[in-house]
Figure: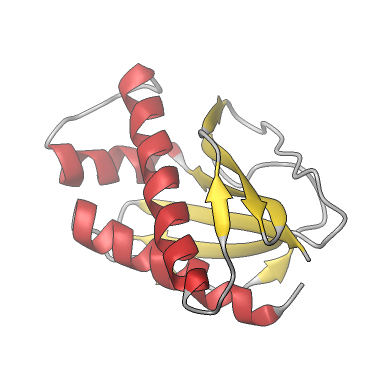
Length: 153
């Protein structure tokens, strides 16, 4: 996979969390995922099609998504419920949309599906792809989350 695809996903993630939830997120060093175990407690997954095929997922630790929701909506959630699922789905949609806009400026046109939410400790995420899955780890004042994506040329 072309490494220039990393920055649109990185920049979109930072921008969406800053503007929508007033949360600063600090990126870690990107790496290639070696297994299917999610790096969090709840994950939004969205399929991508168009000039490239692939998927994007965002996995949040529960403390992280709890803190983001408190900042974003002023609501406290003490468990993974339907409202948390909805928030993860919406954040996944927004980050994917921002990244797609940035990729369009590189003449790469993509469409996205509807996010699916998976929750639970040690859940798995299977990106249906022959390309490597890139993981972008992030930290916040509330905990960690990671963005994973894979695009087939």
